[in-house]
Length: 380
Image 1 (cartoon, rainbow, N blue to C red):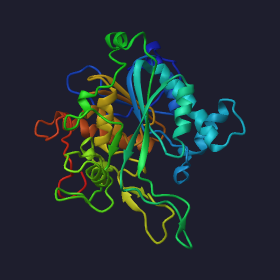
Image 2 (cartoon, one colour; image 1 turned 120 degrees about the vertical axis):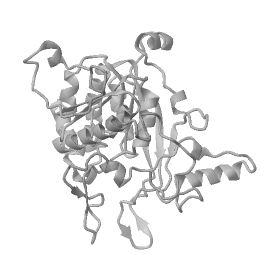
Image 3 (cartoon, helix red, strand yellow; image 1 turned 120 degrees about the horizontal axis):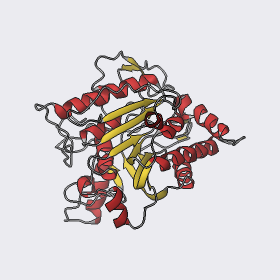
Image 4 (tube, helix red, strand yellow; image 1 turned 90 degrees about the vertical axis):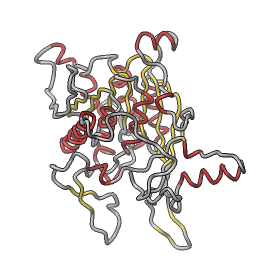
């Protein structure tokens, strides 16, 4: 994947740093490439119709922990587009349209986009990218039981919010070039790769279940989402072997998974609950607050991107999509505004690429092993 400035030579706009050090052995092009800058600007430098799939976890527009990238920066981008006096949600929708238009241009015809969202603003995300010209195909749901209520307690058992237990994922597609068959033949895109995402032989569903970290071979921990769904199915179909949790289970990222590859980086403050009283923030080498589990991102990459294709993440964060792409044998290009996160992403991706090429490594780039329950010890 080349940028416009690289195609034209020098003078193609502001130069951008490319710190990714992970390269495959053999192929001429690197398997993963990272670019620093605002995604709305950097997307404009990429060649058109060159991306096979976009898998991303963009800002949700909810002012997460008062982070600038999830609030002020989005409103500023909306104002620069000529829209004035917008509410935060309206500004987020405008930003999603701008971002969606840039993604539409770089996607191949029929290529899919998968983007995480918040239950509070997913409608704005979907409206924005639909107005940009992408087709909304589905909404996936990642269910988990590890969320923490973000609400103050009030007298007589009252609160202002529910415990979060799912995140929606919008599935969109650039319009086809002709029929589905013609698009597949010409571009290799247009359809989802369902056989690569089957679990226990089942056709992939639009619901992904998350076990609690304490689940083991002997059973599930209290409050486990997967166990609750399985119990409902057992009551509805007594005597039949129906276990919905076998579709795919995926707990949240563990500390070890978050920090893998970052051993040489300094420890930074990781404060997931800034409003909690009497609790000092932890420290981690990967302090990104919204790291997605690698297993989940690998499944999404396989679903959307053809083998050997090019995956784009325009808001790369700490690099989980890139790590998933190289483990699944896909090429990757990522964009990130914050230099500190870009450094972490480069380290994490390089670590996973090293696993691919280490003949003694248990995971040599194939699909991760799946089972109905995590092994004893909980987290994976």
